[in-house]
Length: 147
Picture 1 (cartoon, helix red, strand yellow):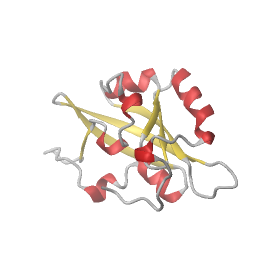
Picture 2 (cartoon, one colour):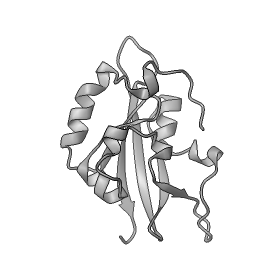
Picture 3 (cartoon, helix red, strand yellow):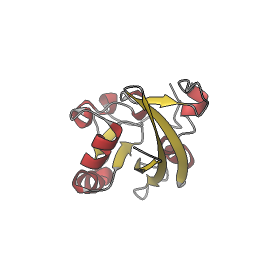
């Protein structure tokens, strides 16, 4: 498991920071392939376009899994397409945005039923003053190459 800078209040991520409520509504209504993560990397909202693009189940928002444990198979960019190790998972844009409090961008390669897909991912931390640390991250996914 990737350590985060601080603990997040709430039992098993059930608590949704009030600052994320309007972002959740925006993501749920978005036509862009985007995802909202809480500060503990739990998935709070997924736009329908992202759910379809990434092959996530409809129940992903109700289950609130952590981004790195939501059923996506993250692969490296070698010809062998091996699963990413923890150190490499920590460098994925949505996780990095929460760690660095800065806009992050990375390529992500996923295995979807034996088909490897690459995505350009841009993630921005979200803040709610007076809290200094990010309360969540908003990530956008763009497919790269043929689908």
